[in-house]
Length: 258
Image 1 (cartoon, rainbow, N blue to C red):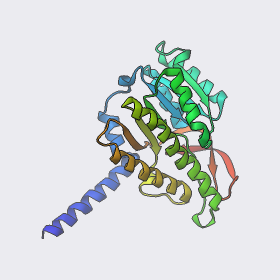
Image 2 (tube, rainbow, N blue to C red):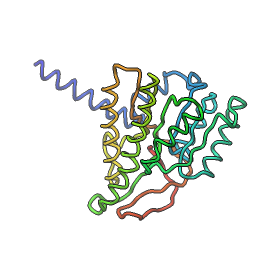
Image 3 (spheres, rainbow, N blue to C red):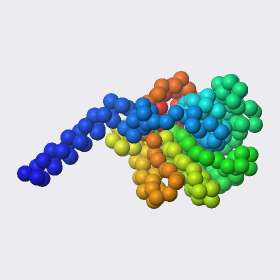
Image 4 (cartoon, rainbow, N blue to C red):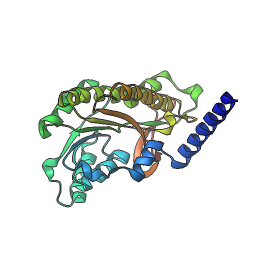
């Protein structure tokens, strides 16, 4: 009888969690904090390093933070777009931020050897970095059977290995300072899977695993490493999506889940 009740309870919990996750369209912890968490204004004066800041979630994260006077490091490949985002952030801040409060770092996130140099550049400019937001990434659309291994490797280089390498560089700084936070934009595809996106789904499952492991290791410390499954937002921005063959891309308007 006890095990029957336990089984029913577990089934009910799992089903409820699954349904609520689909309805909220994001991680339930994120959904809770969005409704009842602390305001970004408490981050005023802190330094946040955002990858993939030239468009989409990264760009709009920068705007939300700039509104509350948060100092920013904006990184992505397209310098012209980063400069545009910087100008918008200064305007949005309504006098809270000046030119020196927003550092633009053009960088290719898949150039792993450059991570330490760019992160040190940010530290040299501001004296510290308080939060790393790993947002840079790419989606994919292809039938699982037809995906070339080169595409899997390319997706994992960008969505996984670039993220964990830069995060380890950041952790060196955070460990020395005794504080710091890492946020990773993930996806529901990293929890429940998604059809016709095998490489992308696999990369997001990998990110969930890596950062759950980190979170457990750092529970006793002040550091925080969480994979945040972002609420689905539709932005009219052009982004590259991989298909089944390496080098096969299209420019499109997309809905991004991170």
